[in-house]
Length: 318
Image 1 (cartoon, rainbow, N blue to C red):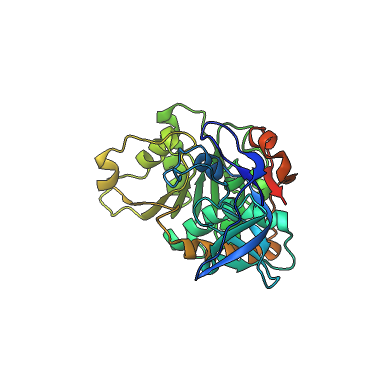
Image 2 (cartoon, rainbow, N blue to C red; image 1 turned 45 degrees about the vertical axis):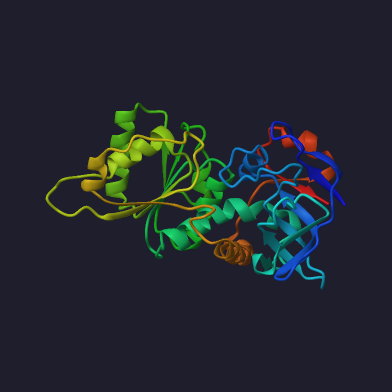
């Protein structure tokens, strides 16, 4: 079969031939129609992600849209081993497939699955978000963050507070449902005070963190207090680390707050529940009015598109 093939962790995949997968008990073959290129996929294909495989060659791609042998159209995720989604055919556990609603096209479903799951699963599976609570999204200017605004609103958030690199980067996020826009280009001390005021005045219940690094340090420093009353419960859900992989965490931030820190990603939620979260997300795409910019690119152009800088989500089509 034809596929995008990684021969070297330090080079983009090349279009070429790859062995056909064979399904075993509990698995199904999927005739792939669309598979999205995400930061997770790039990280895995470079060997740098904690879930990266070590065997080469391999086909990259963690999810996509395709047809089952009986003709049903599904979203699928977590292909087996070296048989990634960026191929004419892949193999996955049957439990890792969910139907794609008729009103959602292949490219949109493939593009929205992974970035939309990041906030949907974080809110529903990890934070156990309740309708009427308030959400702060740290790093809301990317594809995942912009979807997180829409998803938080759809799930019933009363207020959504967002952050971005600077004032220009967060322009337009109000139109997606954000109530409060916070630029991150202030000095650390001033940013901590801005966060403290936002968290208290808007009664933030859940923080979704796509950045980690310095802004996360300011956020965590802002949640503490010692007024003599118990501080409110705040669930901090770590999702991405675009601004750094480590932070300094003062012990006092935990002792003086109602802070609960957790992560959301591969391993913190079972694969089957992550796929189920995406199934719920896809059912809500039309009714929720979720939007995502996506560019359909033939898989034959994988080597060129892999390294191109595009604002829209690249989706390879077969």
